[in-house]
Amino acid sequence: MIIQKPVYMQRYPDGLWRELPEGEFQADNPNHSLFYEMQFAADDTSDQLNSFIESWYEFFRQIPRTIHHLNLRWWTDSNGRDIRRNPYCFSNKLALIHSEISEALEGDRKNLYDTHLPQFPMRDVELADALIRILDLAEAYNIDIAKATIEKLKYNRRREDHTAEHRATANGKKY
Image 1 (cartoon, rainbow, N blue to C red):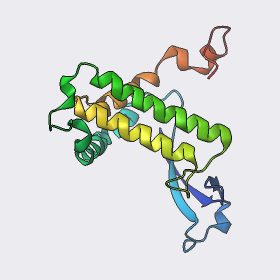
Image 2: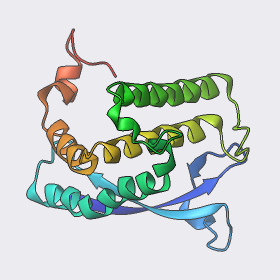
Image 3: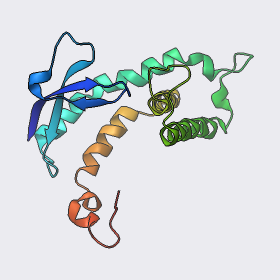
Image 4: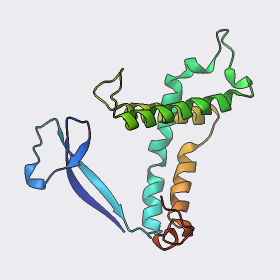
């Protein structure tokens, strides 16, 4: 079963959003925002949930296409040749994604703000960089990342090793 719950949030000087009591929300305050939290039963594998996830496919599918279009200049060499001809291109792009994740870790570890976008913590910006690179890579190689993500979400919801009972066992996943 899907439940939509309104959540009133405030952005604090540290850039993080925290929940506000309903009575304190001010619609005209630029640091206040109303979100809708989608709540699902942990063991819900219903057709309603699967239908909800599937409904996001077309929207999600447009994001990698748009990002790749904006980044086409990174997919040709100085002579205008497609760099995907290089068999190491995919692994090189994966290494760049890894570097963004490492930068996010460093920003979080040292509580740094980004030097290019100082209104954001470094971890936020580096995670955005990683996401941009992942979606760009997927589109460049005709990987339907939207469909794969949707199917993986649906699969993970019914995985035995993701249940609270299994995680509590001696060899269960702790995180």
